Length: 79
Image (cartoon, rainbow, N blue to C red):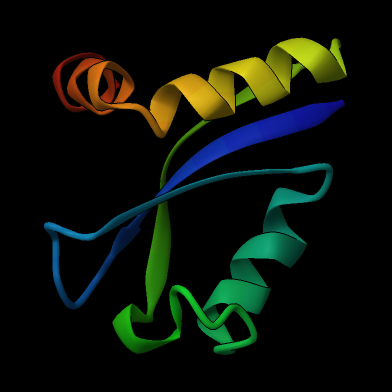
């Protein structure tokens, strides 16, 4: 199983992070511990949305879509 997640900064609600993992709790802990340089300065994070995929290729494609302009618009409106 592969999770595609959207995290939201608890300090700055305009900051979001999109990623994928096989262990959502462990990945959130790493973000909140400051182990991810890209997100360290906006911690703490909370899970806003996550989706579970059984097909790894579909998960990667959806993560890539969410990182695009139209994907960000979709997530803001629908997720």
